Amino acid sequence: MEIRDLPKEFRIRMQQQLGDEADAFFYALDLPAPVSVRLHPKKGKSDFDFTGQVPWCENGYYLNERPSFHLDPHWHGGAYYVQEASSMIIDAVVKQLPLPSASRIWLDLCAAPGGKTGILAKYLGDSDVLIANEVVPQRKSVLYENLVKGGYPNTFISGEKTSHFPADFADVILIDAPCAGEGMMRKDPDAIHQWSPGLVRSCSVLQKGIVSDAVKTLKPGGWLIYSTCSYSPDENIDNAVSFLTQHPLENVTLNFNPAWNITEIRKGNVTGYQLYPHKVRGEGLFITVFQKKGEHQSKFTTSKKEKRFFFPLMHPLEQFVNDPSKYLSEKRGDEYFIITAESGSLASSIHAQLPKAELTSKIIEQKGKDYIPDHFLATSGIHSEQWGSISLNEAQALDYLERKIPVFEKDNPTGWYVIQFDGTSLGWMKNTAQGWKNYFPMNWRLRNRK
Image (cartoon, rainbow, N blue to C red; front, side, top):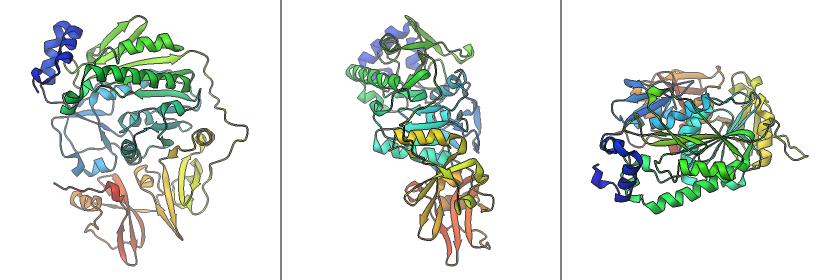
């Protein structure tokens, strides 16, 4: 991409915005976009040669080039997530928040495809609950797949409009707001073609509406993290100033290592932080944090007639889960879901307030007299140790991911087996009297082995 390929109005604004740095900015946009991955904090593994660590994320690493991730079984098993480095700054932000120790509701309001949700999940306590929200059905499906492959506990997925969440509901809200996508111009030519000053203005209006809804949903004393992948003041610092003047919020100053070259932007009583591609090894991202005024209340209230949704694991569920006393279960139709016992009361309250929200932690589906273990049970690593495991080599693992029956030593007793590749759990197979059956999810199977 050359500077002449960029929209004229964008070039003029960035020259005014950056001054002497503009040439370096435009030169950076002409370079290849960096490639980075974030290892799963509990099961992270990769066979790639990393060229350095993303400085603001302890699990983030750079690669020299973009490999065929879909041919790596570790990727299918959720051992890592392919994520743009600048967006990993969420990790350094959450670390700085003096969060209450009581049970907390985390809400990722614009969650798809789930990269930032995965960072939030890293900070959940056993009594916390995370809600990943996405209103676009197709994007919600991708979000669900990534959450299940990540095996994140205590996580709900929802598709609510931002105005539909209860008041004084969440302790931490992340808004990675829909934006004009200026930070995507180096990676995605469509971001250039769709850009216009009108798009920037319309996104700014949309962002104000989302934040207005979010402030009502946020508990007093709660934290609101706002980010976009744009450079425009309309969507970023100017919007942040309007948030402060229109809502009961206080802006929070963050501390980043000066060596990270993150640009601090101040306007009025607001401080925001911009990552520019000519100053960091990543794309464009703006972020700022607010705290809602008022005293924090850890108690979450529901209707007077509180319904109980979760119960101790009963036979035969307990035989599928390691240390079943740590969990509670929920039955919806023929499906069983699981949640940590410490979060049961909070999760029940969420069900009462958001009846359409669904847990991603399905463990079993009953079909007649049979109980079929779910994919989450394997990827989360909470399955009972009584179930056998089979370790495959790369070629066998790719056969399995295509939903074939891999050729391997099959002298095993009948029953369920967790399929693994180099320590990463990929899913389930069952050895029956009629032979082996592959239970990798059909919709997620490997379709192109080239």
